[in-house]
Amino acid sequence: MSMVDVSEKPLVFREAKAKGTIKLKVETINKVKDGKIEKGDVFSLAKVAGILAAKKTSELVPLCHPLPLSTVDVKVRVVDESHLAVEATVKAIAKTGVEMEALVAVSAALLTVWDMTKQYEKDEKGQYPATTIGDIQILRKVKKG
Image (cartoon, rainbow, N blue to C red; front, top):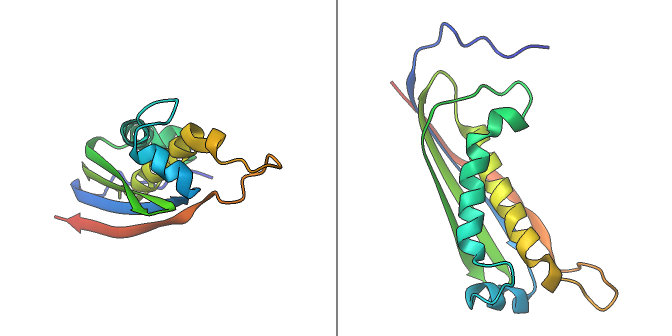
């Protein structure tokens, strides 16, 4: 097992965009929109978590190269009455792609949303029937140069 040898590859512009969603109760989405989540601003904290996670990708994913990221942009938005979506765009001048960083950013942002809202998601049995994190995928991968 070893990291892929990229020493002979040229530095080029790389960009990747990923997305994912989380399904929550309608009441929880309303609390998020109204800023009534006890732990704070879900949108802002999820964005920060995504940015920090992208920067730490090589520490989280074995054999992933550490990359000098130029920018990480994370957007969190309400899709409909029961879904939030996260999109992350990552850019770098590097020898290898940044899709792992975009995927990790989305995943960490969604997990942060879950951590901040889970107390509102339990049903009368203490279960979480409405919550689903998923649809995590690469939307775009660009290499120029």
